[in-house]
Image (cartoon, rainbow, N blue to C red; front, top):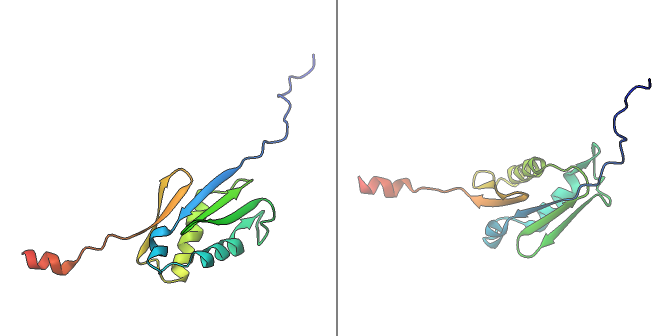
Length: 125
């Protein structure tokens, strides 16, 4: 009797993921340069372990005022994009004022930290 074999493995279907990084709030305040961030992503995203190997696999484009759209035809993690965004904020010394928040699946937004005035609290006492 012949051994039972597993089902035939076909080629893995191509996955297409779409991510949006919304930086419209800090961009409207003129403290965040969206075009520099787009260039940073082009330079730093790794494909197959190599930087600058985007080719046709990953498309990065600027959508409107302060939005960047990343379309990946491979397994690209949202956490990786969040990591690169934090790295860019640290490089530009904006990490103390901005944070990266996931508002929905595949959408990341740059928001200001809620700063509470200590002077106003002292006056109330």
